Image 1 (cartoon, rainbow, N blue to C red):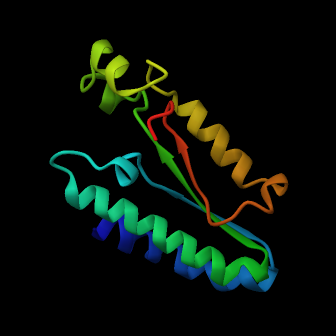
Image 2: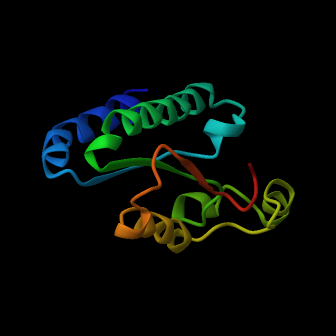
Image 3: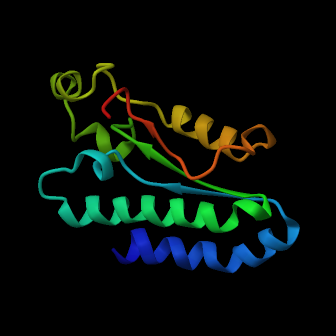
Length: 134
């Protein structure tokens, strides 16, 4: 809870006044597919990430008139050093409809788009990069 919710507020809050004054800004929070699906043994994690969704949606409403967008990227099973030993191929095929792990570059591409000028009318959204898990 402290990292996922309080961390979000501690990082974003000092930047908000400057973005509001500039009348431009982008806030991207990173969540998890677990916030939408839940996960055994991770009630606190899933709850904190779901709380992040609500915080981002509220902040988007507060800052929209100031040209600041606020969105959430919710990755699913992404191929990283940490996840490589956690999921075998059969498990991935079973839980991910696209039958593969996502790539960090796929998550990064969405974030890059969301911080661009072209994404100026996208705000208050939770966007999954999860191979159709949600």
